[in-house]
Length: 380
Image (cartoon, rainbow, N blue to C red):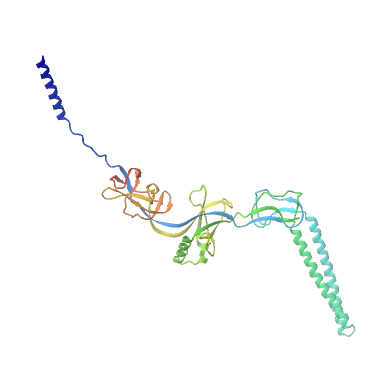
């Protein structure tokens, strides 16, 4: 039995050694390189814009003020309504001022009658003096009376004009077409004892947009104006595009209207202004606005999708794949946005293969498995 146990033990040990000799040694197999999509930058002609932020402002905005004293007898508009030039907005107690006008007109008529009599008396004395019938003193008195009557006519005419002006102030008219605010007085209120604000009227068409331009942009604009052969007086031929908050793009279009003659030394900026038709009255004064002004047209540029851009402490960058499928990081200077694409100013060439999908799976210095794709034309 003891011998049998030894034989069985030896057999087990032999089988164990035989099985161990049949196993393969463990080896590390690296994972395949990550798959990414690469594409060449799009080469396209673009328009370079000056982009700024600003505010809309009314071309005309006026406080309507009572210019005479009296009681408000009528309010002839609805709060917030659009009115035309010359529309009656308020009526301030016309009868007293109408009576003063009639009184002034009567006084002017009386002075005219006195002048006619004085002129006739002067002519009569002048004829008599020539025939040595009347004295020189009588002629001088007649001349003085005539001149006094002429002065009285002029004074009476001035009084009539003043009375007519005051009478015209009894009707407060819209000085221009626009929208009128809510009235600040009520019918029956006494106004004019001191400057009394009645309402405010704001012109809605056209509409200004005001913005500031940095000193560097001013130099660029002036250089482009010289390059295009234009003069500073041709500023109104420069288009302006405006977009409001919540709007896509720049749907409102107009043209430049004014540029300040000097740079503000405290801010280093230049005040500029555009004007827009505002035909649909979408723009209201005081809106925040995005403004852009074209500087150069048909400029060659490279564009990549916004999704292909990364950012680190060194700024914006793209990842490109070389001929050996190794990833390289290139820091770039970005330009304006065009749809889902971004203009690359510097740091990239047209032959670079830019990673446009799988950016998070790529590591600079490591290999990737690139698949080339075609980018859709930006203009589509």
